[in-house]
Image (cartoon, rainbow, N blue to C red; front, side):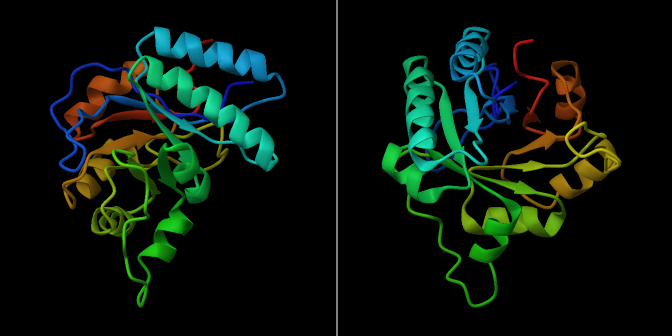
Length: 214
């Protein structure tokens, strides 16, 4: 089973984070760990060797000790090659391990709700903050919160959400025009979609399956 990750190819891009000064990556891979942790780490090694430079780790259902151990191991591998690593939805663990944080849409909404301080979550120096977004309002919330980038979709139908239609690239581009932060397209995308994504204003593509070694 493929991991719960996002990944980037490390290809040169036209943007950088004003907060961190680091270049943005063109691909961002999302997924979760199956039962074979050794195979998962081997897959991560292969992805990094192929040029992936941004990884989001999702471990739904894993106990706290297992989550910490696997994320620490993955973070060490990513740092060894200069890749960014973010953990999905767990700000405490992100701070403990000094990695970035990827906010779920519900977490983003709670942080930016009326009456909330709308402060960027405290993270380690240089750690990235990202968010999952599904409409232009959520993209605006991500920008207001100070996210370094966002993931937006689904652009195309995807196996992870059967029966849910994609919004298409034109709708993606229209929403993308509302914000200035880098935005990755997500949903049914493969490396072959990267050029079309860039033509529609995307920073690049995010994928659960499409960026993981077969």
